[in-house]
Image (cartoon, rainbow, N blue to C red; front, side, top):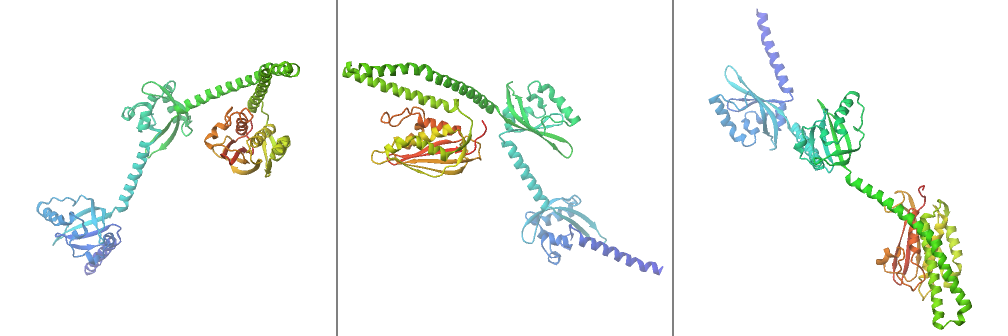
Length: 515
Protein backbone atom coordinates (compact mmCIF):
# COMPACT_ATOMS: atom_id res chain seq x y z
CA UNK A 1 0.00 0.00 0.00
CA UNK A 2 2.78 2.39 0.86
CA UNK A 3 4.53 1.57 -2.40
CA UNK A 4 1.41 2.35 -4.45
CA UNK A 5 0.87 5.69 -2.62
CA UNK A 6 4.40 6.76 -3.34
CA UNK A 7 3.87 6.23 -7.14
CA UNK A 8 0.83 8.51 -7.44
CA UNK A 9 2.65 11.80 -6.77
CA UNK A 10 5.37 10.82 -9.26
CA UNK A 11 2.74 10.01 -11.91
CA UNK A 12 0.95 13.33 -11.32
CA UNK A 13 4.26 15.16 -11.59
CA UNK A 14 4.99 13.43 -14.88
CA UNK A 15 1.61 14.43 -16.27
CA UNK A 16 2.09 18.04 -15.27
CA UNK A 17 5.59 18.08 -16.78
CA UNK A 18 4.29 16.54 -20.00
CA UNK A 19 1.41 19.02 -20.16
CA UNK A 20 3.74 21.96 -19.55
CA UNK A 21 6.09 20.75 -22.30
CA UNK A 22 3.17 20.56 -24.73
CA UNK A 23 2.07 24.09 -23.83
CA UNK A 24 5.60 25.50 -24.03
CA UNK A 25 6.30 23.96 -27.44
CA UNK A 26 2.90 24.65 -29.00
CA UNK A 27 2.93 26.66 -32.25
CA UNK A 28 -0.24 28.49 -31.30
CA UNK A 29 -0.35 30.92 -28.41
CA UNK A 30 -1.99 29.88 -25.14
CA UNK A 31 -2.95 32.45 -22.49
CA UNK A 32 -4.76 31.87 -19.19
CA UNK A 33 -6.63 34.66 -17.38
CA UNK A 34 -8.62 34.72 -14.14
CA UNK A 35 -12.23 35.82 -13.82
CA UNK A 36 -11.13 39.46 -13.66
CA UNK A 37 -9.18 39.30 -16.94
CA UNK A 38 -5.75 39.24 -15.29
CA UNK A 39 -3.18 37.19 -17.17
CA UNK A 40 -1.88 34.23 -15.17
CA UNK A 41 0.09 32.24 -17.77
CA UNK A 42 1.52 32.93 -21.23
CA UNK A 43 3.25 30.28 -23.31
CA UNK A 44 6.33 31.23 -25.43
CA UNK A 45 4.31 31.20 -28.67
CA UNK A 46 1.80 33.74 -27.31
CA UNK A 47 4.57 35.99 -26.01
CA UNK A 48 6.31 35.83 -29.39
CA UNK A 49 3.09 36.55 -31.31
CA UNK A 50 2.40 39.71 -29.29
CA UNK A 51 6.06 40.77 -29.13
CA UNK A 52 6.42 40.62 -25.36
CA UNK A 53 8.41 38.60 -22.88
CA UNK A 54 6.21 36.40 -20.71
CA UNK A 55 7.04 38.31 -17.51
CA UNK A 56 5.97 41.59 -19.15
CA UNK A 57 2.34 40.50 -19.50
CA UNK A 58 1.76 38.13 -16.57
CA UNK A 59 -0.26 40.02 -13.96
CA UNK A 60 -1.50 42.55 -16.56
CA UNK A 61 -5.08 42.90 -17.74
CA UNK A 62 -5.65 40.96 -20.96
CA UNK A 63 -6.96 44.18 -22.56
CA UNK A 64 -3.37 45.38 -23.10
CA UNK A 65 -3.29 42.91 -25.97
CA UNK A 66 -6.38 44.44 -27.61
CA UNK A 67 -6.82 47.47 -29.88
CA UNK A 68 -9.78 49.80 -29.51
CA UNK A 69 -12.70 49.45 -29.06
CA UNK A 70 -12.12 46.00 -27.49
CA UNK A 71 -9.45 47.45 -25.17
CA UNK A 72 -12.04 49.64 -23.42
CA UNK A 73 -14.98 47.24 -23.63
CA UNK A 74 -13.31 44.03 -22.45
CA UNK A 75 -13.82 44.48 -18.69
CA UNK A 76 -17.50 45.22 -19.24
CA UNK A 77 -17.77 42.14 -21.47
CA UNK A 78 -16.36 39.88 -18.70
CA UNK A 79 -18.67 41.44 -16.09
CA UNK A 80 -21.70 40.90 -18.34
CA UNK A 81 -20.71 37.28 -18.82
CA UNK A 82 -20.46 36.69 -15.07
CA UNK A 83 -23.91 38.21 -14.57
CA UNK A 84 -25.77 36.67 -17.52
CA UNK A 85 -23.72 33.61 -18.51
CA UNK A 86 -23.99 34.76 -22.15
CA UNK A 87 -20.61 34.85 -23.90
CA UNK A 88 -19.75 36.37 -27.24
CA UNK A 89 -16.63 34.25 -27.82
CA UNK A 90 -16.41 31.71 -25.00
CA UNK A 91 -17.01 28.23 -26.35
CA UNK A 92 -17.42 29.56 -29.90
CA UNK A 93 -14.26 31.10 -31.26
CA UNK A 94 -13.97 33.75 -33.95
CA UNK A 95 -11.60 36.02 -35.83
CA UNK A 96 -10.47 39.05 -33.79
CA UNK A 97 -7.71 41.65 -33.79
CA UNK A 98 -4.73 41.77 -31.45
CA UNK A 99 -2.32 44.57 -30.59
CA UNK A 100 1.39 43.90 -30.42
CA UNK A 101 3.86 45.60 -28.12
CA UNK A 102 5.00 47.87 -30.99
CA UNK A 103 1.41 49.00 -31.57
CA UNK A 104 0.75 47.08 -34.76
CA UNK A 105 -2.64 45.41 -35.09
CA UNK A 106 -2.92 41.92 -36.57
CA UNK A 107 -5.68 39.31 -37.11
CA UNK A 108 -5.90 35.98 -35.31
CA UNK A 109 -8.37 33.21 -34.60
CA UNK A 110 -9.33 33.11 -30.92
CA UNK A 111 -11.05 30.21 -29.19
CA UNK A 112 -11.76 30.51 -25.41
CA UNK A 113 -12.62 27.73 -23.02
CA UNK A 114 -13.86 28.13 -19.44
CA UNK A 115 -12.19 26.00 -16.78
CA UNK A 116 -13.81 25.57 -13.35
CA UNK A 117 -11.25 24.57 -10.73
CA UNK A 118 -12.17 23.64 -7.14
CA UNK A 119 -11.30 27.07 -5.80
CA UNK A 120 -11.55 29.38 -8.82
CA UNK A 121 -12.57 29.89 -12.45
CA UNK A 122 -10.11 30.39 -15.31
CA UNK A 123 -10.39 31.21 -19.00
CA UNK A 124 -7.92 29.76 -21.50
CA UNK A 125 -7.48 31.37 -24.89
CA UNK A 126 -5.84 29.64 -27.83
CA UNK A 127 -4.45 32.12 -30.38
CA UNK A 128 -3.75 31.20 -34.00
CA UNK A 129 -2.02 34.00 -35.91
CA UNK A 130 -3.57 34.37 -39.39
CA UNK A 131 -1.56 37.37 -40.59
CA UNK A 132 0.06 35.41 -43.44
CA UNK A 133 -3.24 33.78 -44.30
CA UNK A 134 -4.89 37.20 -44.58
CA UNK A 135 -2.06 38.46 -46.76
CA UNK A 136 -2.44 35.44 -48.99
CA UNK A 137 -6.21 35.97 -49.17
CA UNK A 138 -5.68 39.65 -50.01
CA UNK A 139 -3.15 38.74 -52.69
CA UNK A 140 -5.55 36.16 -54.09
CA UNK A 141 -8.40 38.69 -54.13
CA UNK A 142 -6.13 41.23 -55.81
CA UNK A 143 -5.10 38.65 -58.39
CA UNK A 144 -8.71 37.66 -58.99
CA UNK A 145 -9.69 41.32 -59.31
CA UNK A 146 -6.89 41.91 -61.80
CA UNK A 147 -7.86 38.89 -63.85
CA UNK A 148 -11.50 39.89 -63.73
CA UNK A 149 -10.63 43.46 -64.72
CA UNK A 150 -8.58 42.17 -67.64
CA UNK A 151 -11.41 39.91 -68.76
CA UNK A 152 -14.02 42.63 -68.38
CA UNK A 153 -11.91 45.24 -70.20
CA UNK A 154 -10.56 42.93 -72.92
CA UNK A 155 -11.17 44.09 -76.48
CA UNK A 156 -11.62 40.51 -77.65
CA UNK A 157 -14.56 38.43 -76.54
CA UNK A 158 -14.11 35.78 -73.82
CA UNK A 159 -16.70 33.06 -73.12
CA UNK A 160 -16.46 30.13 -70.69
CA UNK A 161 -18.62 27.00 -71.05
CA UNK A 162 -18.90 23.73 -69.13
CA UNK A 163 -18.56 20.23 -70.59
CA UNK A 164 -22.19 20.31 -71.76
CA UNK A 165 -21.63 23.52 -73.72
CA UNK A 166 -23.57 25.68 -71.23
CA UNK A 167 -22.29 29.25 -70.98
CA UNK A 168 -20.94 30.15 -67.54
CA UNK A 169 -19.21 33.49 -68.18
CA UNK A 170 -19.39 36.15 -70.90
CA UNK A 171 -17.31 39.31 -70.90
CA UNK A 172 -18.81 42.60 -72.17
CA UNK A 173 -16.91 42.48 -75.48
CA UNK A 174 -18.29 39.04 -76.32
CA UNK A 175 -21.84 40.06 -75.38
CA UNK A 176 -21.59 43.22 -77.48
CA UNK A 177 -20.06 41.32 -80.39
CA UNK A 178 -23.00 38.95 -80.55
CA UNK A 179 -25.56 41.68 -79.83
CA UNK A 180 -26.72 40.40 -76.42
CA UNK A 181 -26.54 41.40 -72.78
CA UNK A 182 -24.35 39.03 -70.74
CA UNK A 183 -27.34 37.90 -68.64
CA UNK A 184 -29.13 36.84 -71.82
CA UNK A 185 -26.40 34.28 -72.54
CA UNK A 186 -25.39 32.84 -69.15
CA UNK A 187 -26.99 29.43 -68.65
CA UNK A 188 -27.75 29.01 -72.36
CA UNK A 189 -26.11 26.59 -74.79
CA UNK A 190 -23.17 27.99 -76.72
CA UNK A 191 -24.67 26.78 -80.00
CA UNK A 192 -27.15 29.66 -79.92
CA UNK A 193 -24.24 31.78 -81.12
CA UNK A 194 -23.56 29.52 -84.12
CA UNK A 195 -25.14 29.47 -87.56
CA UNK A 196 -25.94 26.19 -89.30
CA UNK A 197 -24.48 23.63 -89.69
CA UNK A 198 -22.39 24.25 -86.55
CA UNK A 199 -25.54 25.02 -84.53
CA UNK A 200 -26.81 21.45 -84.95
CA UNK A 201 -23.43 19.72 -84.89
CA UNK A 202 -21.90 21.32 -81.79
CA UNK A 203 -23.41 19.00 -79.18
CA UNK A 204 -22.22 15.99 -81.18
CA UNK A 205 -18.77 17.50 -81.42
CA UNK A 206 -18.66 18.01 -77.65
CA UNK A 207 -19.76 14.38 -77.08
CA UNK A 208 -17.15 13.09 -79.53
CA UNK A 209 -14.41 15.07 -77.84
CA UNK A 210 -15.41 13.85 -74.37
CA UNK A 211 -15.40 10.27 -75.68
CA UNK A 212 -12.39 10.23 -78.00
CA UNK A 213 -10.31 13.26 -76.97
CA UNK A 214 -9.96 14.16 -80.66
CA UNK A 215 -9.70 17.96 -81.05
CA UNK A 216 -11.05 20.16 -83.84
CA UNK A 217 -10.50 23.60 -82.31
CA UNK A 218 -9.40 23.15 -78.68
CA UNK A 219 -5.78 24.16 -78.34
CA UNK A 220 -5.57 24.78 -82.09
CA UNK A 221 -7.65 27.81 -83.05
CA UNK A 222 -9.20 28.58 -86.42
CA UNK A 223 -11.47 30.90 -88.34
CA UNK A 224 -15.19 30.30 -87.78
CA UNK A 225 -18.48 32.17 -88.15
CA UNK A 226 -20.82 33.48 -85.46
CA UNK A 227 -24.54 34.24 -85.34
CA UNK A 228 -25.63 37.56 -83.89
CA UNK A 229 -28.92 38.19 -82.11
CA UNK A 230 -30.23 40.02 -85.19
CA UNK A 231 -29.48 36.98 -87.35
CA UNK A 232 -26.43 38.36 -89.13
CA UNK A 233 -23.43 36.10 -89.58
CA UNK A 234 -19.88 37.38 -89.11
CA UNK A 235 -16.36 35.89 -89.19
CA UNK A 236 -14.08 35.62 -86.18
CA UNK A 237 -10.95 33.79 -85.10
CA UNK A 238 -11.65 31.36 -82.26
CA UNK A 239 -9.08 29.82 -79.93
CA UNK A 240 -10.23 27.54 -77.11
CA UNK A 241 -8.35 26.47 -74.01
CA UNK A 242 -9.28 23.56 -71.76
CA UNK A 243 -9.04 24.23 -68.00
CA UNK A 244 -9.04 21.48 -65.35
CA UNK A 245 -10.55 22.76 -62.11
CA UNK A 246 -10.52 20.86 -58.82
CA UNK A 247 -13.84 19.14 -59.46
CA UNK A 248 -14.67 19.74 -63.11
CA UNK A 249 -13.52 20.86 -66.52
CA UNK A 250 -14.36 24.10 -68.36
CA UNK A 251 -13.53 25.54 -71.77
CA UNK A 252 -12.64 29.18 -72.42
CA UNK A 253 -13.05 30.61 -75.89
CA UNK A 254 -11.20 33.72 -77.05
CA UNK A 255 -13.02 35.50 -79.87
CA UNK A 256 -11.28 37.96 -82.19
CA UNK A 257 -13.62 39.69 -84.63
CA UNK A 258 -12.08 39.67 -88.12
CA UNK A 259 -14.95 41.37 -89.96
CA UNK A 260 -12.87 44.44 -90.77
CA UNK A 261 -9.91 42.26 -91.69
CA UNK A 262 -12.09 40.35 -94.15
CA UNK A 263 -13.40 43.61 -95.61
CA UNK A 264 -9.84 44.85 -95.97
CA UNK A 265 -8.81 41.59 -97.60
CA UNK A 266 -11.68 41.92 -100.06
CA UNK A 267 -10.72 45.52 -100.80
CA UNK A 268 -7.12 44.42 -101.30
CA UNK A 269 -8.25 41.61 -103.61
CA UNK A 270 -10.33 44.03 -105.64
CA UNK A 271 -7.49 46.53 -105.67
CA UNK A 272 -5.08 43.83 -106.87
CA UNK A 273 -7.55 42.82 -109.59
CA UNK A 274 -7.97 46.47 -110.60
CA UNK A 275 -4.21 46.97 -110.57
CA UNK A 276 -3.76 43.91 -112.77
CA UNK A 277 -6.40 45.22 -115.16
CA UNK A 278 -4.72 48.63 -115.15
CA UNK A 279 -1.35 47.04 -115.90
CA UNK A 280 -2.88 45.12 -118.78
CA UNK A 281 -4.33 48.37 -120.10
CA UNK A 282 -0.89 49.96 -119.73
CA UNK A 283 0.60 47.11 -121.74
CA UNK A 284 -2.06 47.62 -124.39
CA UNK A 285 -1.31 51.33 -124.37
CA UNK A 286 2.38 50.61 -124.76
CA UNK A 287 1.61 48.42 -127.75
CA UNK A 288 -0.59 51.12 -129.29
CA UNK A 289 2.05 53.74 -128.58
CA UNK A 290 4.82 51.72 -130.17
CA UNK A 291 2.84 50.89 -133.29
CA UNK A 292 -0.36 52.81 -134.01
CA UNK A 293 0.76 56.20 -132.61
CA UNK A 294 4.28 56.14 -133.98
CA UNK A 295 3.24 55.33 -137.56
CA UNK A 296 1.35 58.61 -138.20
CA UNK A 297 4.02 60.46 -136.21
CA UNK A 298 6.72 59.11 -138.54
CA UNK A 299 4.68 60.32 -141.53
CA UNK A 300 4.41 63.81 -140.03
CA UNK A 301 8.16 63.85 -139.52
CA UNK A 302 8.84 62.46 -143.02
CA UNK A 303 6.63 64.97 -144.81
CA UNK A 304 8.02 67.77 -142.67
CA UNK A 305 11.54 66.73 -143.63
CA UNK A 306 10.50 66.73 -147.32
CA UNK A 307 9.09 70.22 -146.98
CA UNK A 308 12.35 71.39 -145.51
CA UNK A 309 14.41 69.62 -148.18
CA UNK A 310 12.37 70.32 -151.33
CA UNK A 311 9.93 73.15 -150.68
CA UNK A 312 11.74 75.23 -148.06
CA UNK A 313 12.77 77.94 -150.53
CA UNK A 314 9.18 78.29 -151.76
CA UNK A 315 7.76 78.77 -148.26
CA UNK A 316 7.09 82.11 -146.69
CA UNK A 317 8.85 83.02 -143.50
CA UNK A 318 5.70 82.16 -141.59
CA UNK A 319 5.43 78.83 -143.43
CA UNK A 320 9.04 78.01 -142.61
CA UNK A 321 8.32 78.80 -138.93
CA UNK A 322 5.26 76.52 -139.00
CA UNK A 323 7.23 73.61 -140.46
CA UNK A 324 10.05 73.98 -137.91
CA UNK A 325 7.58 74.19 -135.00
CA UNK A 326 5.72 71.15 -136.36
CA UNK A 327 8.92 69.08 -136.56
CA UNK A 328 9.96 70.19 -133.05
CA UNK A 329 6.53 69.17 -131.71
CA UNK A 330 6.77 65.81 -133.50
CA UNK A 331 10.21 65.26 -131.98
CA UNK A 332 8.94 66.05 -128.50
CA UNK A 333 6.01 63.70 -129.09
CA UNK A 334 8.43 60.97 -130.17
CA UNK A 335 10.48 61.45 -126.99
CA UNK A 336 7.33 61.43 -124.86
CA UNK A 337 6.17 58.16 -126.42
CA UNK A 338 9.58 56.60 -125.88
CA UNK A 339 9.60 57.72 -122.23
CA UNK A 340 6.10 56.31 -121.70
CA UNK A 341 7.27 53.03 -123.17
CA UNK A 342 10.25 53.01 -120.81
CA UNK A 343 7.95 53.69 -117.86
CA UNK A 344 5.59 50.84 -118.77
CA UNK A 345 8.42 48.40 -119.47
CA UNK A 346 9.83 48.67 -115.93
CA UNK A 347 7.33 45.97 -114.91
CA UNK A 348 5.73 44.72 -118.12
CA UNK A 349 9.02 43.88 -119.84
CA UNK A 350 11.07 43.13 -116.74
CA UNK A 351 13.75 40.45 -116.67
CA UNK A 352 14.97 38.13 -113.87
CA UNK A 353 17.39 39.43 -111.24
CA UNK A 354 21.05 38.49 -111.49
CA UNK A 355 24.26 39.51 -109.75
CA UNK A 356 25.04 43.06 -110.87
CA UNK A 357 28.26 44.95 -110.18
CA UNK A 358 27.09 48.53 -109.64
CA UNK A 359 30.64 49.78 -110.09
CA UNK A 360 30.61 48.42 -113.62
CA UNK A 361 27.13 49.83 -114.26
CA UNK A 362 28.25 53.36 -113.26
CA UNK A 363 31.31 53.08 -115.52
CA UNK A 364 29.13 52.08 -118.48
CA UNK A 365 26.67 54.92 -117.79
CA UNK A 366 29.48 57.48 -117.59
CA UNK A 367 30.86 56.14 -120.86
CA UNK A 368 27.45 56.58 -122.52
CA UNK A 369 27.20 60.14 -121.17
CA UNK A 370 30.80 61.02 -122.08
CA UNK A 371 29.85 63.71 -124.62
CA UNK A 372 27.45 65.67 -122.38
CA UNK A 373 29.86 65.31 -119.45
CA UNK A 374 32.66 66.87 -121.52
CA UNK A 375 30.37 69.51 -122.96
CA UNK A 376 29.08 70.58 -119.53
CA UNK A 377 32.48 70.32 -117.84
CA UNK A 378 30.92 68.01 -115.22
CA UNK A 379 33.15 66.50 -112.55
CA UNK A 380 32.19 63.05 -111.26
CA UNK A 381 33.41 61.91 -107.83
CA UNK A 382 32.82 58.21 -107.18
CA UNK A 383 33.10 55.91 -104.18
CA UNK A 384 33.19 52.11 -104.65
CA UNK A 385 29.76 50.50 -105.11
CA UNK A 386 28.93 46.87 -104.23
CA UNK A 387 27.45 43.94 -106.12
CA UNK A 388 23.72 43.35 -105.63
CA UNK A 389 20.93 41.27 -107.14
CA UNK A 390 19.16 43.37 -109.74
CA UNK A 391 18.15 43.72 -113.38
CA UNK A 392 21.18 45.15 -115.18
CA UNK A 393 19.29 47.13 -117.83
CA UNK A 394 17.12 48.85 -115.25
CA UNK A 395 20.14 49.68 -113.08
CA UNK A 396 21.76 51.39 -116.07
CA UNK A 397 18.53 53.23 -116.80
CA UNK A 398 18.21 54.29 -113.16
CA UNK A 399 21.72 55.74 -112.81
CA UNK A 400 21.67 57.26 -116.28
CA UNK A 401 18.49 59.16 -115.38
CA UNK A 402 19.94 60.40 -112.08
CA UNK A 403 23.31 61.47 -113.48
CA UNK A 404 21.91 63.10 -116.63
CA UNK A 405 19.31 64.80 -114.44
CA UNK A 406 22.10 66.26 -112.27
CA UNK A 407 23.89 67.55 -115.38
CA UNK A 408 20.72 68.96 -116.93
CA UNK A 409 19.66 70.98 -113.88
CA UNK A 410 23.05 72.60 -113.33
CA UNK A 411 23.71 76.23 -112.48
CA UNK A 412 24.85 78.54 -115.29
CA UNK A 413 27.59 80.04 -113.13
CA UNK A 414 29.62 76.89 -112.41
CA UNK A 415 30.16 73.41 -113.84
CA UNK A 416 28.26 70.51 -112.26
CA UNK A 417 29.92 68.42 -109.55
CA UNK A 418 28.29 65.04 -108.99
CA UNK A 419 29.23 62.80 -106.05
CA UNK A 420 28.19 59.14 -105.90
CA UNK A 421 28.71 57.25 -102.64
CA UNK A 422 26.99 54.63 -100.52
CA UNK A 423 26.05 53.40 -97.04
CA UNK A 424 25.02 49.96 -95.82
CA UNK A 425 21.90 49.99 -93.63
CA UNK A 426 19.43 47.58 -92.09
CA UNK A 427 16.16 47.08 -93.87
CA UNK A 428 13.62 49.69 -92.74
CA UNK A 429 9.96 48.92 -92.11
CA UNK A 430 8.65 51.23 -94.86
CA UNK A 431 10.52 49.46 -97.65
CA UNK A 432 8.98 46.79 -99.78
CA UNK A 433 11.48 43.97 -99.24
CA UNK A 434 11.41 41.58 -96.32
CA UNK A 435 11.98 43.43 -92.99
CA UNK A 436 15.36 42.65 -91.47
CA UNK A 437 17.16 42.12 -94.82
CA UNK A 438 20.27 44.16 -95.53
CA UNK A 439 19.97 47.05 -97.93
CA UNK A 440 22.17 49.73 -99.40
CA UNK A 441 21.72 53.49 -99.61
CA UNK A 442 23.27 55.16 -102.64
CA UNK A 443 23.63 58.93 -102.66
CA UNK A 444 23.78 60.94 -105.89
CA UNK A 445 24.66 64.47 -104.82
CA UNK A 446 24.93 67.51 -107.10
CA UNK A 447 25.56 71.25 -106.82
CA UNK A 448 22.77 72.21 -109.20
CA UNK A 449 19.80 74.56 -109.02
CA UNK A 450 17.96 72.53 -106.36
CA UNK A 451 14.27 72.90 -105.49
CA UNK A 452 11.91 73.59 -102.59
CA UNK A 453 11.47 70.37 -100.58
CA UNK A 454 7.74 71.04 -100.29
CA UNK A 455 7.58 69.81 -103.90
CA UNK A 456 9.36 66.54 -103.05
CA UNK A 457 6.37 64.27 -103.72
CA UNK A 458 5.66 65.93 -107.06
CA UNK A 459 9.04 65.33 -108.67
CA UNK A 460 8.58 61.53 -108.59
CA UNK A 461 5.13 61.62 -110.19
CA UNK A 462 4.70 61.06 -113.90
CA UNK A 463 4.59 64.25 -116.05
CA UNK A 464 5.44 66.45 -113.03
CA UNK A 465 8.03 69.15 -113.83
CA UNK A 466 8.97 72.03 -111.55
CA UNK A 467 10.81 74.03 -114.21
CA UNK A 468 8.10 74.05 -116.90
CA UNK A 469 9.50 74.09 -120.45
CA UNK A 470 12.81 75.72 -119.55
CA UNK A 471 14.54 72.31 -119.61
CA UNK A 472 14.00 69.53 -122.15
CA UNK A 473 12.23 66.37 -121.06
CA UNK A 474 8.86 64.80 -120.48
CA UNK A 475 8.89 64.73 -116.66
CA UNK A 476 8.89 60.92 -116.59
CA UNK A 477 12.56 60.23 -115.73
CA UNK A 478 12.29 60.40 -111.93
CA UNK A 479 8.99 58.49 -112.00
CA UNK A 480 10.87 55.70 -113.81
CA UNK A 481 13.61 55.87 -111.15
CA UNK A 482 11.11 55.39 -108.34
CA UNK A 483 9.39 52.52 -110.15
CA UNK A 484 12.72 50.75 -110.66
CA UNK A 485 13.74 51.35 -107.02
CA UNK A 486 10.48 49.94 -105.69
CA UNK A 487 10.78 46.89 -107.95
CA UNK A 488 14.22 46.30 -106.44
CA UNK A 489 12.93 46.28 -102.86
CA UNK A 490 13.62 49.92 -102.06
CA UNK A 491 12.58 53.49 -102.73
CA UNK A 492 13.99 56.89 -103.64
CA UNK A 493 13.76 60.29 -102.00
CA UNK A 494 15.70 63.54 -102.08
CA UNK A 495 17.02 66.42 -100.00
CA UNK A 496 17.39 69.79 -101.65
CA UNK A 497 17.62 73.57 -101.29
CA UNK A 498 17.18 76.11 -104.07
CA UNK A 499 20.56 77.29 -105.36
CA UNK A 500 22.49 74.77 -103.24
CA UNK A 501 21.87 71.46 -104.99
CA UNK A 502 20.07 68.16 -104.58
CA UNK A 503 20.97 64.82 -103.03
CA UNK A 504 18.98 61.83 -104.26
CA UNK A 505 18.91 58.97 -101.74
CA UNK A 506 18.35 55.64 -103.45
CA UNK A 507 17.65 52.55 -101.32
CA UNK A 508 18.01 49.08 -102.85
CA UNK A 509 17.81 45.61 -101.32
CA UNK A 510 21.12 43.84 -101.77
CA UNK A 511 19.36 40.50 -102.17
CA UNK A 512 15.98 40.27 -103.86
CA UNK A 513 13.15 37.84 -103.07
CA UNK A 514 12.35 35.39 -105.85
CA UNK A 515 9.76 36.73 -108.27
